[in-house]
Length: 333
Ligand code: KG4
Ligand code: ZN
Image (cartoon, rainbow, N blue to C red; front, side, top):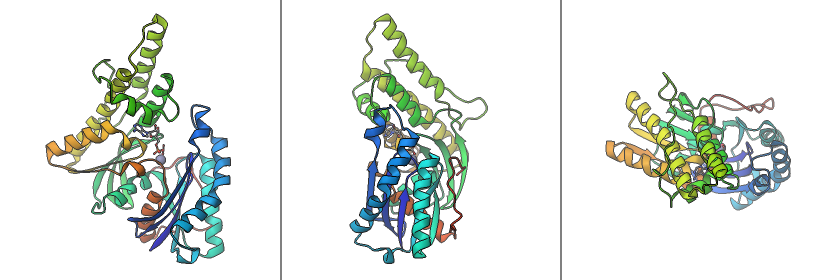
């Protein structure tokens, strides 16, 4: 079964053709990041306009690369929540129009579910149930994936998402948006023990995260040093901050797995590309003889292949939308 998938929840316009939820036939991602860099973050109005310009050529390219026409497509999967509302609406309305004109069934796909599904492409043997840490620019969740379309949130951030904390800390150090990637790269040459940063925990909620205090601590460190004219070693600041974020993520994730008796751990979302997170979790799982899965780095960020994967399982479970499908800025998993 072939799904044409469309993603436009943030600053990437993407389309893909995916077979049986596991095999990418084509995948096209048009990134707007260079334009948003000028403003230090995503400007929603600009994102919507760029999606509207890019959606037709990106979908055409995905079909062409797959050597397909619409008559080869069995369903259209589209990200409908959560994300920037104006951005989501471009993908949703385009997919609705295409479905109406062709009679191809329309499948609504939740953005975080599709991040999780990127793992089904990278790890062909992976099947639910498993415990998943979903960490992106907008979310930091521990999710119990009971089945392909049945999930429960075990823990989540009370304030900033992990990616957001990385980006804001990186911006204070003058790194371009999205700073998480650059910070990860620079941190590889730094000492993670150079600066003592807090490990904020949420009282009575051991699986929840809080990153805003940690972000403020590193921003204060940078500002105070600048005021005193003390030059900080950038690599050491990056390494210490990355170590603190990863420590919080891994500690709560492992605790949740132990408490729930889960021995199959998975990571997903943009921040799952983080080198230290990947290494640390792999080591922790190895120590305990647990299974650990992660998406290949090229599938960690936003793309439409993961939408095609999740869309396949949503379709099998009967999740088909009509032309009244709407987009939603927020929605639980
Ligand atoms: O999943 P994603 O592409 O978009 C959202 O759905 O939010 O995640 C983007 C986030 C950004 O905050 C970016 O800085 C972060 O993922 N990110 C990283 C790394 N690569 C991307 N954060 C830390 N280390 C990385 N290697
Ligand atoms: Zn995302």
